[in-house]
Image 1 (cartoon, helix red, strand yellow):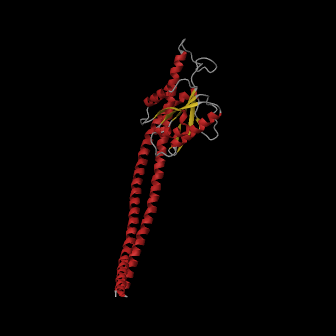
Image 2 (tube, rainbow, N blue to C red; image 1 turned 90 degrees about the vertical axis):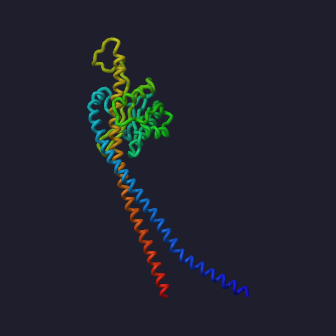
Image 3 (tube, rainbow, N blue to C red; image 1 turned 60 degrees about the vertical axis):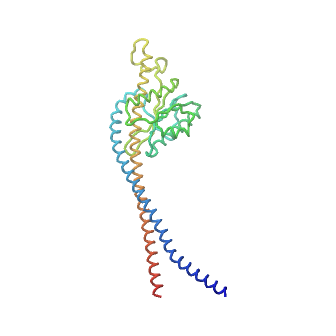
Length: 315
């Protein structure tokens, strides 16, 4: 008597469980579909917000680039007089040997404090690493005074033992007073260096910039390398005049290099934000297509379930 009753109870519970499971399965599928759509929808909105930010940053960089270009074009004529003393800058090419850099040189690479500007800082850091490696291979000593937080963080990993000082949180836009303050920082690193090498990005146009360096050797008042021999000086003051002129020459060259680096930075940031905006737009299109496919699959599944249910009732 008990056995048939137990079998009847078990069969009844199995049928109830089957009915509950059959009702819950479509709800679970729908819930999973809605969660996927919700995630895609959130990703689309987040990417659109990022695209708005990068587009705004591109416009800001374009406006800043115009100001930096005007300051650069105004500074270039004042740098022409220095080229008659120091010579022209040397481009950073793959085959450059840095033979014009003497032993015990102080290298001053100019980088930025902010990122999101493409590889503009990485190029300078890579150039410093190559320069130091070739100088070490030739048995020449070198030290670094880094300008810019991004360059400091990168060069600390590459040639950290050569860094003697760093200037970060530099105020923009650059000015001659700021160049004078950085000159004082460079001179405070020591006066026993045989030359100062300024490494920076040179602005060509809004889409192109190159890396170059300039070697500034101290002006000698006597000997074979005597400077300004065509000029006459009062007795006992030539050494003092040349020392002051060397400091002013360094400040002038740093100011011009900072103007070049600032214009290059803004042009690189404008290009980077333009590429980021374009990539964000492509990502929005891809996510929208995926979202529409998931939504269509969910609607199709629900229609199939409704039709199947109606057919079962009619049957």
